[in-house]
Image 1 (tube, rainbow, N blue to C red):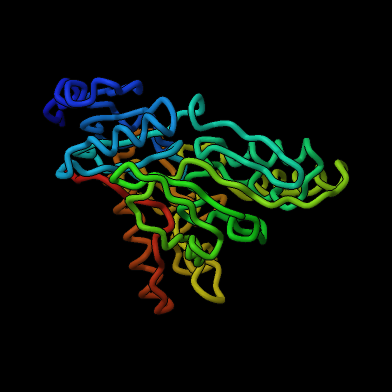
Image 2: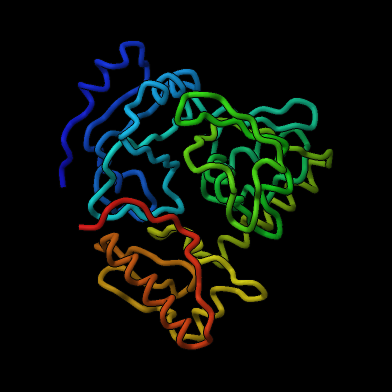
Length: 306
C-alpha cells in the first residue's frame, strides 16, 4: 500500500523545520516483529524545539503516532496514515547523572539508562536493564520487570503537546497504573528524571546480571518478537493461563506462540501482522474458554489492516 506523498506540502508550510521527513517509510524495518505497512510520513525531529515547531504547525486533521524502537509494537499491514514521529538518539538519546538523579532523553534505551546509573554507583534502576525499549515507551506504559516499575523511580517527565507546548508531569501527574500512564496520549514525552540511591558497584552489577540472566534463560530474545504480549491479570501469570489453555507452540501462518515462554509471540520468518494479531486473538479466545479470564493486550497494535 502506498499513501499520497505529503512531504513537499509539509516542508513548504514549515520552512524552519530541521528534522527529516520521509514519505511512505516501511515500518517493518523499525519494529522487532519485522512486519507492517508504511508510514504515510515519518518525521524524525532534530531536537525538542524542532518537535514543538513541527507540531504547532501541523494541520489539525493529520493524525500523529509516536513510535520508539518498536520492541512492543505490531504495525498492521496497511500501515499508518498521517504522520509517524520517531525520536532519534542524536536529539533525544542523552543519559547523564547529577548527584543521585539520572536524566535521560526518551530515545535513550532503557538498558543504557541502567548502565549510566550503574556507572555512577546509583541503584534502583537495574530493572531497566531487562526492558528492551526506550524511556519514552517506559513512561507511556509504566514499563517494569523483575519486581520494579517505572513509577517506582520517576521524579518527573517532560513532553510536548499537539499544540507545540511543553508540559511537565511529576510522578502523581503521570497517573500510573499497571502497564499504563493516564497522561493524554497526544503528549510526546521528550525527557525524564529518575531517582537513584547510592550503592556499591558490585551490588548493582550483581542485580543487573540477575536481570540479564533471567531474560536469557526465560525469554526468546533472539527471535523476531514483541516482548510480553498480554498483561498479567490480577493474581495470575498470563503465560501460565496460556499454557494451561494448550497454546504453547500454537501457529497461525508464520506466527507462533513461543515454546520457551508462551506469553511471547514470534515471527518464524514469513508472518504478516495479520498472522500475529490473529494468533494473539486466538490465544485470548482459548484462555477465555478454558478459565473464564479475558487477557488484555500489552503489545500496542496500530495502523490499518489490508
